[in-house]
Image 1 (tube, rainbow, N blue to C red):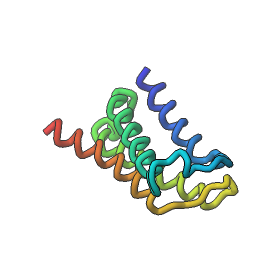
Image 2: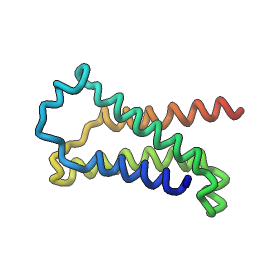
Image 3: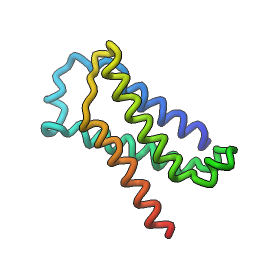
Image 4: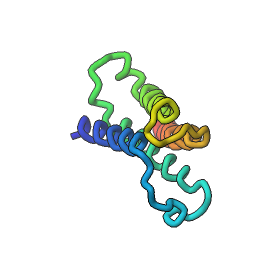
Amino acid sequence: MKKISLAITSLLIITLSIIPQPEIETKSILLFEGSDKIIHLLMYAVLMFVWIKSKIFFSNQLIRNNWLFSGLLYCLGLGLILEILQYCTSFGRSLDFFDIIANATGSLLVFIIFKIKNF
């Protein structure tokens, strides 16, 4: 089940990141300018949390020994790659530096909380 949770969470974030933005007026949905960054932060916080909970999924000894840091690298890498894909493709999306910051912040928050909690 942990394998499936990580795969589903990752695929959901990938899908939401590459599908074209809807034609609806997004300002009517968002509470304030830039509130989509909160969504980015939450998505990557959830992804990092799911990574932490699925640590037994990995058979590679190096990843198992460094699973928390590996999860952070996975989340940061995925966020960066998806933003670059938005820039390089015609998905109707664009690269946003503040999205990258929000993605990293969500991942780092969970990473730091877990490090503090377990030491």
